[in-house]
Amino acid sequence: MMVARRAHVAVISGGTTGIGLATAFRLLKAGHRVAVFSHGEASVAAAGAALAETFGPGMSLARQVDLREPAAVRNFFREVADVFSAPEILVCNAGISPKGTDGPADVSDLSLEEWNDVLTVNLTGSMLCCQAVLPAMKEKGYGRIIFVGSLAGRTRPRIAGASYVASKAALSGLSRVLVSQYSQYGITSNVVAPGRILTPLIGSAETKTNIDALARIPAGRLGDPDEVAAVIAFLASEDAGFVNGAIIDVNGGEFAPS
Image (tube, rainbow, N blue to C red; front, side):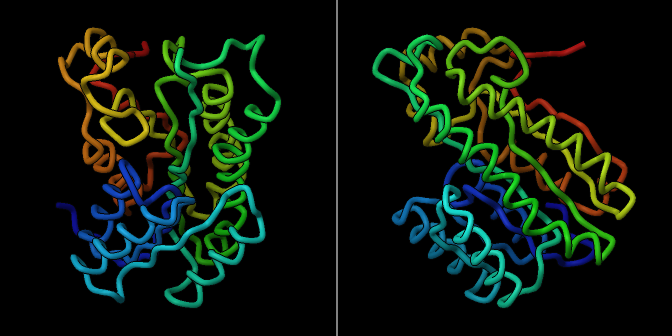
């Protein structure tokens, strides 16, 4: 486990389950203080208790926040700054991917409500988080921003719907803008693009969708959240200062760009 040269404050959206929670454990083990949030009351309570039990009550913070509510997002970041200090690490991991019983809706059947909701959470929510941390990062001359994208935003999607794919692909564009505007202030921005990872979002490994996905993965298995968290933790570290504007695929070889 990599130990940080300096302890920082990290915020993880969607940080109470799956990849987000695994990342919280990684960053706390490295010596950082970590604040996590998500929309689900039960998952926030469970994650908060688990983090406090493992690392002590003064090292972490868990709150219920809806990314659809800009005021709530701003209030959360103010609380983090008051309790710890302004975050120097931001992991934008929160995301929703609506699916019906027959899979994602065809574009011709996609409702505007679903389209707007997914982009509000997955894309606009990430932008709001960036707006909350960038001024202090700029003032300190240091920052790490990591977006959790998706295999679906990198190549032809087989499972995800149009709203999810568009939102995840757009995170790469947002990251490039941050590279252009904030690199001179010691702030890096990168994207991690997971493939099929065993998280609550994708359900059991025994579903037909996941069994079909397994056949496409050269590694011969589905991924573990901690494998993605390890990459995020590196990008969040001081050792990753020259990794900037990258998209790192973590998918067992299912997509291997040239």
